[in-house]
Length: 107
Ligand code: HEC
Image 1 (tube, rainbow, N blue to C red):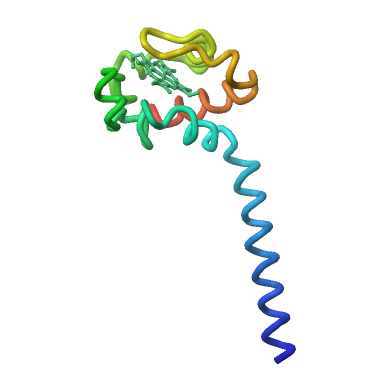
Image 2: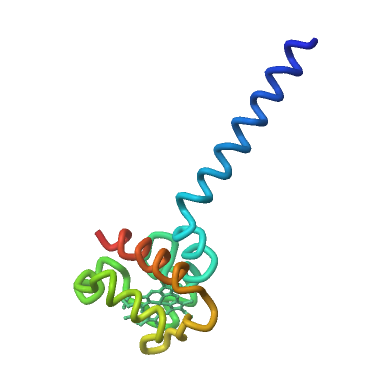
């Protein structure tokens, strides 16, 4: 009985720890998921209904692959084509982290 409780407590601790660590490591991913994915798609392939309607280019497109992280940060900050600027909606850190995450998808 006591043993069962103890192992459950240990399990909860591990789950909580994994949760916080995952969040700290992937805040760029978290921002991407909540703010960018609807247009750019889960894997950057723009395969969502909004992405298709707005003709967002997939990350596999040579024009997107050419983008450096700095150029992606710039596009995210100030907007590009039909993409709205994010400079008033996200912090510089969030923009940088989500642009870096997006850039990672383009590999
Ligand atoms: C409302 C839809 C929408 C949202 C939300 C959105 N984008 Fe875009 N994004 C676009 C469109 C449209 C373009 C320009 C067309 C194109 O070239 O893909 C674009 C272009 C870009 C580009 C230039 C490279 C490229 O793919 O052409 C980057 C980098 C980019 N977006 C990053 C982001 C990031 C990071 C976020 C989230 C913080 C985000 N976008 C959110 C629609 C969106």
